[in-house]
Amino acid sequence: MFIEKSNSGRRLVISDIHGCAKTLRVLIENIIIPGKNDQIFFLGDYIDRGPDSAGVLDYLIELKKQNSILFFLKGNHEENILNAYKEYDKETFMFFVKRINKSMDLLSDDGSIKVEYLNFFNQLEYYFETNSHFIVHAGFNFNSEKPFEDKISMLELRRTELENAKRFIGEKTILHGHQVTPLAEIMKTISERKKVIPLDNGCYYTKPHKIYDVSQTGNLCCFNIDTYELILQKNIEGQ
Image (cartoon, rainbow, N blue to C red; front, side, top):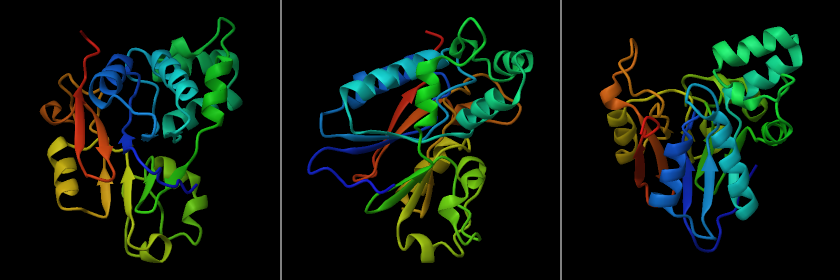
């Protein structure tokens, strides 16, 4: 979907939130403070891991009612819960949501996804295009003849190869989340104006971890497309 730039206002991209509702609210209300002409793109993965998936969705749904120029991508976590809801029996699905996704607050008492959340998930897009950037949750498979129809890659790809990219995206830059990336690396790709810029700093990852160096993670990132400014809000869920 191509999104025209508004005549005034900022274009901001917010990375994977993963249930960190307090952190999201502070980022938007205390730091960004959106104006009526700002366009805000969300990279998906609103749910799971963090303590308040429902709080994230409630807040975003309410923001959308107040401001029509918010744009939401689907992440693999939204796709996973939708697929599980369609494919699993009730007991298995509830186990999946409770143990694997840690998001029981998304369900009604009867074990179904709450209607407002189901509607939100079903309206999510796979990518956005602007005059200068492509915005996607994970990446694009440019070895495919139809990379913009390859939904699995847009949700799951770990690395976008640029060998065949130019014929599809020209000189535009790709902004993505999905892959937790150290802050120093994110900042380096931005300062060097790389053609692929990762924005997921693992907002949820604040405690010692066997894979991630948590001194380099734990921020919710907001990227200004036009100024290339990176705005950070440290995880505050435990406060």
